[in-house]
Picture 1: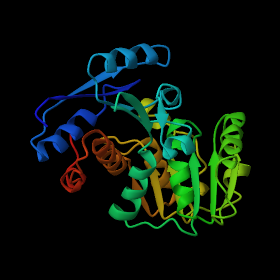
Picture 2 (picture 1 turned 90 degrees about the vertical axis):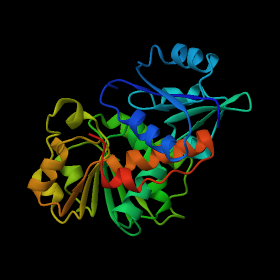
Picture 3 (picture 1 turned 180 degrees about the horizontal axis):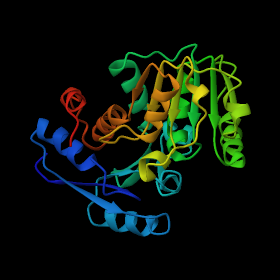
Picture 4 (picture 1 turned 45 degrees about the horizontal axis):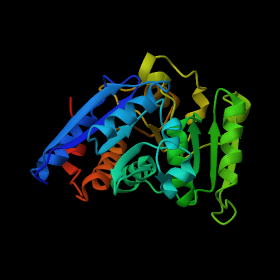
Length: 282
């Protein structure tokens, strides 16, 4: 790989992103030359940015909030993972076409199963939020056949649309999974206990504010997992600990593992993630 690969990560906010450092670590493992940019892009400017990037020799781009659903429409072809998720977190050029994929679910499951040693089969799982981040992980979670998966969102109409979309693509009976969708009311949240609670909303990371969850939500919870990573415990992680969750984790492992999967798509090289998992980038 003599020619320098042009890569990037886009979203808003984006200044906090560690993706350039992660992918430079991966490239260094193979003495590969990359140029990894970091640009703030909004849904309004997404199409123009992507057109310019690929026209000017771009190879691959990581896509983060709030662009994951909109980016799906830009690719010439999309993977089954992106189709099932109705969201896209990577677009790359290959054979004069643009391909859209979603590596978020792969990253989460790899982190949960391989790194945190958590199994999802027959578990009760709650996901908070119904945006592109939630869409990216739900199909992969359902593949693991949890007993029940609930998705709760502040705006009920949005989560009901997600449920309808998913039921048109996945045979939940075949997976032996009960799927429920509702709002963030105590009635909906507290009529079950959960083995795993996953936060896919960016509220606590972007603002530091509490999501306002009832303490009783975490009674009996084995793992509370925030999809977002931060140097300190996120507000969600603090709430989970205060509510009695046995273990908490941020999304650093997921970010590294989904990044490794994206790097493989771009380069056909499979990086070792172990060092980054042991020592996160400051």
